[in-house]
Image (cartoon, rainbow, N blue to C red; front, top):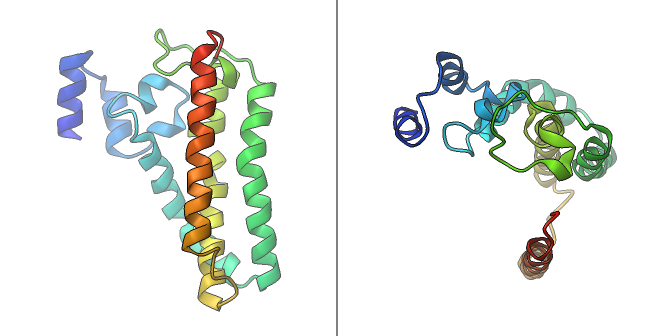
Length: 177
């Protein structure tokens, strides 16, 4: 944190006490301001989410470990659906503006800065991804799922990389993206 604080102070300006403390205590992602959650490294907002997840972990593990195998599959399916559906709904529902003077990450296609924060940075909205991980780990532990295998994973990874590259190229060619 000291290194990040120094670099931010040299490059931009000295972050205020509230911003610095929010990063120190890993609560920066709870504030709907890019100046809070993107100030230090731009990536440490996820640490705030992870801190929240690990606080919730004992309760989630207790509940999910008691669930039957079929229900863990259902939880995984519902959580995957939510990972894709919730950002879409938020992006097409909210059009709120942010009090931040500078927008560090363009958010127009996400419903504005508040919609972007709510859909992608706000810790409870990212909980579905963590629940998927817990559920899959429990399924593997029970011997109920082995995964798709290395070859299938490599093909899926190549497809994902290719589709991301194509969509990025298309987006860069359009000024509104």
